[in-house]
Length: 523
Image 1 (cartoon, rainbow, N blue to C red):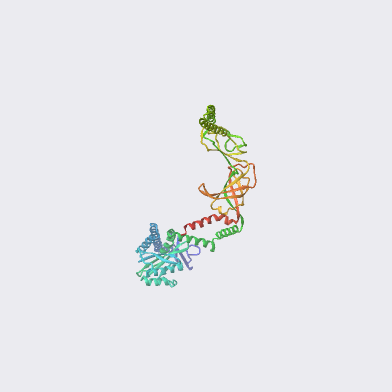
Image 2 (image 1 turned 90 degrees about the vertical axis):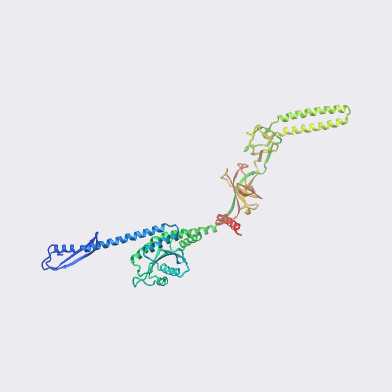
């Protein structure tokens, strides 16, 4: 245009530039070099009218591109829907292959997945089963391996001279008698997990639009099929993959935090393996008296009175309980009267010099005296007294006054206040490590602030069942005395059986169980 924006001078050149815009996007420009003296407004008007067809062409072109994009997105959505309709990888891949063969006008669509550095075809479109050792499967596998190595889409025949090196696809085309072939990678986390190969037997080659759709399918369905494939792998394969991933995280170039944690763990384990401390066997422990005297019912009778109960301290000769004596006293009177009567009979027989009667009556007198002595002995034993200074370990008759008792029934147990012994209930897994004269410490539930030393004095080679566990009775002698000890106290005792590393102490239980389990299951 003119430099001043008005009418051009008669002898000055005029340049006109008119932009071509569609939806605020500059697509081009019309530039004219006008002769001097041309009316600018008229020229601009004519340029505006003449560029209308160009604007309409660009609008139609953008509309066609938009329709093609919508069609491509619709196809991708349908393929994703087909893949999601099936729970198993094979059926899902076959459904997608059939759909792609139909929608992209392909004679065959093959989908394979990487195994051990090679791609093996899994499904072929419109084919329920195929021989994986056939020439067709081998040729398709070689073409897919080429995509795995190049990590990019490969099209045959090449669309330009720059696309070269597709040797596997050229060989596959000769084997399958296809005219055109397109292979795209299935991507998951930037890794090629499989390949999709499309074939056409006519002269229609794969264009850029077909390649764009196929590449989008590989990007879209790769994560889905990777998840399905991981779920369908056997347990040993999943374990192998997990171990491989863990090993790569430890020795690979990435994951510095994991390497630091593993290094710290190895250092801690090594430190624990070299630090040795006393290995102690723990066991439930009970305090018992060195001597425990049982006080039982001397005869069948009834409880008349109770003066002590479990936990109380008694003195030697102290009254603990008394049985009912009324029946015994009546029986004593009866046998006394019987004896007096028989003695008079004996005197009469003696006066008559009847030796036969004298012998019989003398025997009856002896019997009556024996019965009377027995009753008197029972009367003496009807009162239960403490045999020595001690504590009542068991027995409470205060709630049984007037109740009958049988001869020999345990009424009280009395233990002395001095001379205790420690009884440990050692698990059978640890009994082999205990020996005589080993030292240990005991902490009682009632005395948690004091650790009492002891020495093992006896290991009983007989097991018993306690709370569902197989335990052995081990006795020990306390090395220190305290006035606060009472029979029946419970706690935890630990016996020192040697020196071991911390790592062995914390893990030997598991390895012992493992060895026993392996021995049990090994034929």
